[in-house]
Amino acid sequence: MKFGYPYTPPRSMTAATPEHRWTWDRARAAGPAHCCRPRAVRASRWASLPWLWLAVIACSEEAPAPSAVREAPVQTQEPVANPPVAAPQPTGNQLHNPGFEDKLAVGFMNVGDGWGFIRGTRWIGFEVVDQPIHSGRHAARLLLSWQPGDREQPISAQGAIQEISPPRCPDRLAGWYRVDHWENQSDQTLLYLDVAVAAVGDPRARDIVIPDDPELHPDLDNYQIRYYMAGLTEPYDPVLNMRTKLVREGPPELGEWVYFDFPIKADFQELWGAVPADFSFLRVFFEVRWEEKEEGAALRADIYYDDLFFGFDEPPES
Image (cartoon, rainbow, N blue to C red):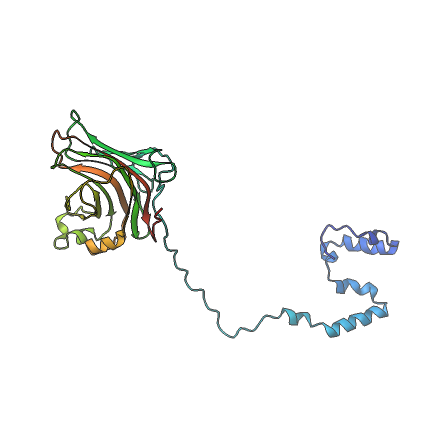
């Protein structure tokens, strides 16, 4: 029988004799403590029945003592503290919106805000388009062009950039690009397609870049790797804190999606002798650029990026 308070007596109790009803009313008036009293205490009213005493004695001889049932096991050794739980390891893609499916408004960059571009006259933002795409519904389009009558500029770049702060340096840099138009009328002008990663805020930056004289550039706070995927015929290292790899020589293939995949962590170790650590953030570039432009020489590059990956484990090549 389940007890509670207030409690409505069962039909058998309400239909009992006046003497029994008086017994119930007195118990109910005593409150919950009395109503919920163990059955053994309230059974005294049945003490005059000899057959019930025999049943109680028989049960008490067969059933184990309640204290024996509830007795706690004996501890034979001191309790062992739980081992420390290891922090979860980062997995997967660290880029936000890697396929540009969120058709966002692109603006100047801040760490963790997603795609953007760098403040400055040399930089041009990109647009999110519906066609052509590698998968999904959108891709990023970079259109870099100079035609007669435009303002001359020796260096210009257009790109999709993200700044992220993973707990350690990712393993892979991968994705897809497509070139639908490529024009460079000058052998002097360097027009190229590249992806790059810069480690910003690594306290070892000066020692890594200029180990013989780290005080030569006291404001140096980053070092980077750039992969040339199309446009150049030989390596090009324009700045002190950059190491490069020439992935493909000459102009790109046109009208086809091309997959790239670089072991960025291993390449930092190979080219710089160190893997980025304790950095403030990693800046990732997917871009097209010109440098050392010849005056009056027309150029144009129409580029698309989609399904980008910068993260841990193996990138999905699909």
